[in-house]
Image (cartoon, rainbow over all chains, first blue to last red; front, side, top):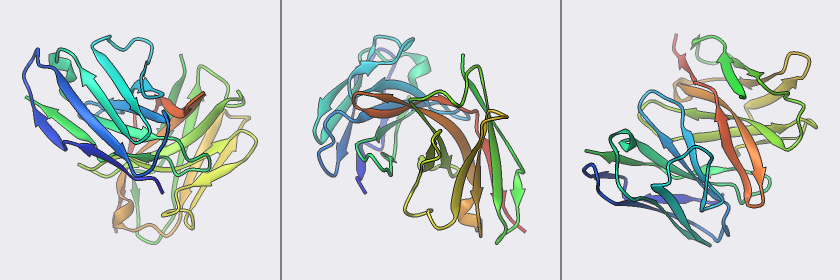
Length: 108
Length: 122
């Protein structure tokens, strides 16, 4: 299985801060990497797919980059509604399993 | 707008079978290009992919659950289902049904159900 490791596991930030979360794959996965946001008590929401493509309706302050084994999600100016947990997910394995990172909690 | 809704018992006894159904509205489950998946999340923990089904009937499961899991589809009801046999407390989690959409760079989860909590306890 392909293992996904996110860092940090949690971070503290303030409104207006620039925040970057990283995700590393245990083997090269090209750009088969997607990012989700999960607010407490709600289902995850797709933010970015294929490493850098912004999902429709997602604010432009979110951006993604990377390929191969190293990826990042950046929030350019943190807003109050962005305090949440973020997950990366790989779908490189054609037969599965599709795996998630352990999550990064963004706190005030 | 596609919507997914999980339904099923919220409490299952140890060693019994967990059964959940996902009803899809706003689109046909027969539409090609999508995998219909289940994902779970124990309280306070991360997301675990359980498995997926394509409308052709092809299924793939997480190796850690493969021996106990079955995903099936009922196209006449626009539903797909999950069964997990021989459950233990470790299967207690919020279960999400999810649509996976294909892109040049693989599949991503674009529509999620709200999730349903299943507790395994006697």
